[in-house]
Image (cartoon, rainbow over all chains, first blue to last red; front, top):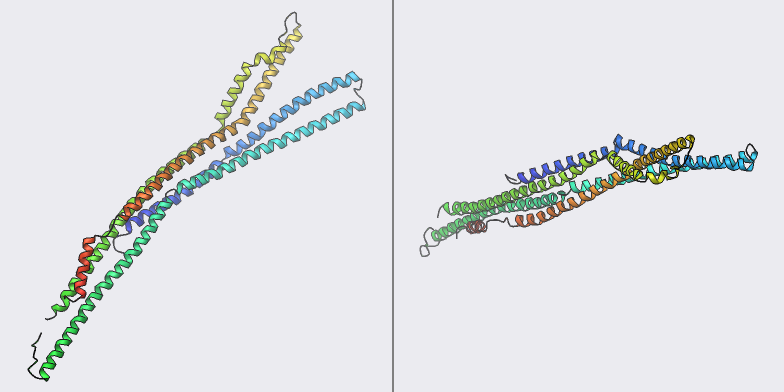
Length: 201
Length: 190
């Protein structure tokens, strides 16, 4: 291929190597961000805050209900009776239900946050990939163009060499034809008389 | 006519072919240099895109919910302070009050304050991750816009690059000379 072709190819290779390294590094960094212990701790803290908020409200309502039930039973003269046991059992069951509901909501909130982060990770990854590949299209176009040029140059050089030998061969053949013609003329003149002697050419 | 009838046309044909080869080589060199320049320029633009991504990643790496939590807590606390009078209004009785009432009212006020503070703290812990992610989303949107700008630059460069490359052509005078020389050689000097 001669001296040409090296510069663009070297630059393209360097750009591609750099791009690949950048993609690998960026992917690693994004994963590190979302898998970091800080984020994991944050999920736990977020869930804990949700749980505490719900439990605070459940406990507050339970406290109010306990007091109201206590006075209601006392006013009705049912304190210490089976009705009191039954009412307190129902209150306890409601409270347990509230506790479980709180936990369920806290877990759902944490799951939503995680899901949101996974979506965010995927978006950032796609965004970064698209940005890191921004030059890929033009570099590939340049490489394709380069390949076309190489092909054209190669064909051109082959044609040149073909022309070179073709020209020499044609000249040689023509010269041989001339030489044969001269030899034939000389023989004809020598053999068939002096009248048509044309002399040597 | 001696051997010069053979070698002179052959030499002229060879010179013509050599000129054609030289022209091809020179054109290829210029195209290669232009392509290399374009790839370097493209790499520079890519560096700009990389820098934008890097900046966003650094922001993301430094992204922390603590600041959002303290900001939210401060706002909740300020709101509680502003509404403290209304919250405690029922406890502010006037007249001859027993010590017990006064003591209970003071305790109740403290419990209202504690309840508000605890709830504010919980709210701020819950709000902080959401606010943090909202800010991260804004950063990503900004990055997307910036990358679109870089991509537009790439497309513009790409168009101009093709034009520039297309304008690098063979030297027509050298081709004409080469053709004439080779024709002369082919015809054997006639």
